[in-house]
Each structure stands twice: as structure tokens, then as C-alpha cells.
Length: 87
Image (cartoon, rainbow, N blue to C red):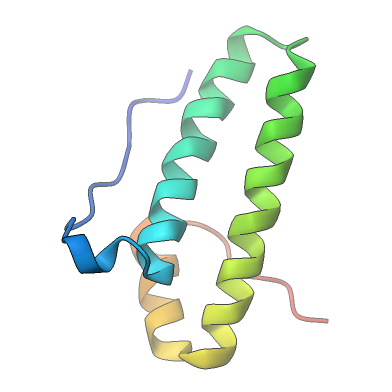
């Protein structure tokens, strides 16, 4: 089972719509769902939700990598996730 390694982010009222905040919150949801699915392997509805959240995070990361490569690299290192595959 995965440890509770949820990332805290400086929550300011104006930062909740930022790409970084959304990626961090999606990453927390992904980690929580992953640990849930390790116990409940046949929870297909949660698997579907996980795939949807993964797609949303992937699209946000692709947007951030196009707009600001430095912020993208910092966020990837902070969250300890893999870099996007480029086509």
C-alpha cells in the first residue's frame, strides 16, 4: 500500500485556478485512488474515474510544457512524476 504522501500546496484564494494547483490536486486524487484500487481490484467505476483524472492531468501538463517549460520542469520534480512523452 502506498504511504500517505500527499503533497501540500500553498493555498491562496487566487492560486486555486492555476495550472500548478490543479495538477497538484489531481496528483493527490490519483495517489488516493491508486491506494484504494490496490485493496479493491474490481472497483471498475473507480478505475474509470482514475483514467479520467489521469487524462485531465496529462492535458494540463502538456499545456504547461508548451507555455512555460521552466515551471513545468519544477512541477515535475516537485511531484516526482514522469515527464510527458512527446510525439
